[in-house]
Image (cartoon, rainbow, N blue to C red; front, side, top):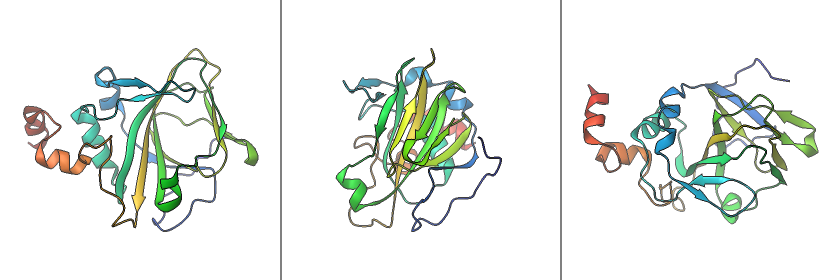
Length: 199
C-alpha cells in the first residue's frame, strides 16, 4: 500500500529502521531524454546490468544529482538495469565498506512498471518504487526485487557517505571526480552545454 506521506531527510547520524521512505518528488524527464547515452556493463551475474565504471556521464545527470542536495559525499552512484522478467533474489548487502562507513542508499526509478516490486520478505513488506520520486531504501535488511513483467527496470542508485572524513575519497562512478567537482572544473561536461545552463 502506497503511503501519501512524504517525509523529509533525517539527520545523517540516524539509522533507518524501516524498509523504505519516499523523500520527495524529482523531475526525471531530463534523464529519460539521455538514457541512450549511458554505457552499460554486463556484470555476468543475476543481479543486473550496471553503468560502465569510469564511463563519461551525460551532463544532465550531473546537474540532476547536484540538485538533490543530499549532503555527505558520493561514495558510489550508478544506474542499474533489470531486463524484462529479471528479478533480484532475496539478499542482504554485506560489502565490507557498508560496515565501516555510514552509508545511506537512495534510489530514483527512471523506467519501471507498477507490477515491479521491491520487497523486504522478513518484514512482510512489498512496495512499488514509482518514477519521479527519490527514495531511501534499507539495504541492511533482507530485500529483493520482483519483476514478473515484460518491462525493463532502470533505477539510479546512490550510496551516500556521511561523517566519513578520512576514509571516503569523495569519488563516485568508478574513480571519476564527484559531480560537484566535475561541474565546477568542466572535466566531464560539454563546455557549451554548461555555459547554456549557467545563463
